[in-house]
Length: 218
Image (tube, rainbow, N blue to C red; front, top):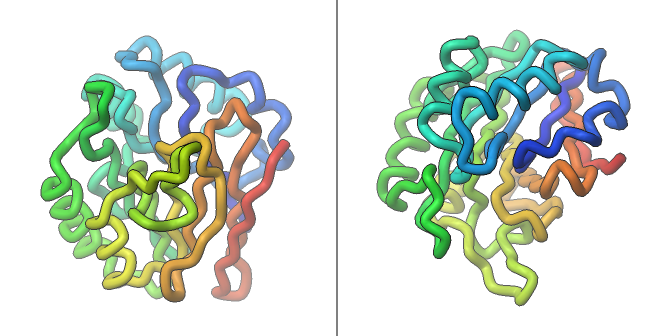
């Protein structure tokens, strides 16, 4: 079985039809920024475009999403922010959305301490899974997935410390569009597929109790 993951949609859904196998996937994992400071209507348009191909959606809000977006995800039974879900026997997914403060004053920003507290609390709900996937919009600091075009690392030290301590099998992140990459922190694979409009997505395979993930592009 397999899942498709992507994020940083920003209301641009034109490439969805080009993602191979999207409709046949067990589900779609969206790692935040569905909208551009949008509300319920914007969220519904994005969700509708994805659901037209695959209605099995799990999503969390990013820093460009308002609280209304998360509320709409919860109303539709798709929200994974501060939640843990079983994807298959022994395989779990936990999610933490939003980001730490940015220079742009976006609607979905929280303090570093809040974000790390959320990670720890949500992990407590997911620690029983044999294999764990973490979806977190904010990338880990000083990694290959948090680098701006000028080379500056802008991710969260707390996210990195969480990964080092919890050691999930896979982390799906985003937020920094130009830092599409695969990295490893200890034994954890960390993937940022970049902005969806750029064609990046992740294909996650789970066969014979073994998890693998590949960064792909349309």
